[in-house]
Length: 125
Image 1 (cartoon, helix red, strand yellow):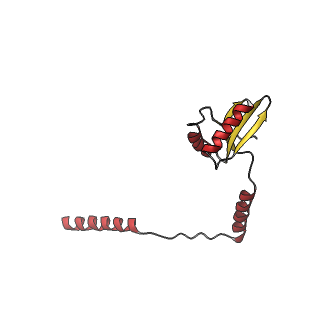
Image 2 (cartoon, helix red, strand yellow):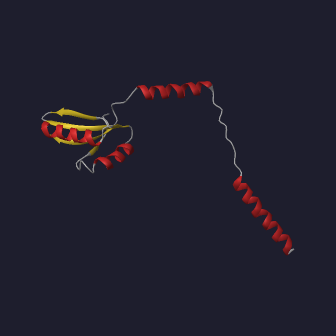
Image 3 (cartoon, rainbow, N blue to C red):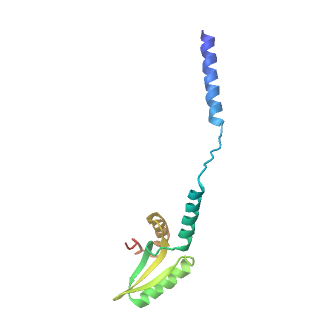
């Protein structure tokens, strides 16, 4: 009886080990209408850039100071968009165009090292 239990236990452990190794392939079939909708959505997203995305505001104040901040930002982050805006009586520097708050916050961590007053601005609704 003792040998029988040991044999059964060993067989179970070997079986569990092999079941962990097995791999499978999953195939998802979808209709042509779904494929067309996904294609249209991808095209729409690439051609329609939303202006209601998150941005980082670096500065709010005088025009001369705003231009200095803008020039410094463009030197440090040449691939990120940088806009100078007038909001009477002050000037604003807003940078980036982030679809999610998470992406804006990630870039803010880099920007805030050079521009300590930088904040994330919520999209206009």
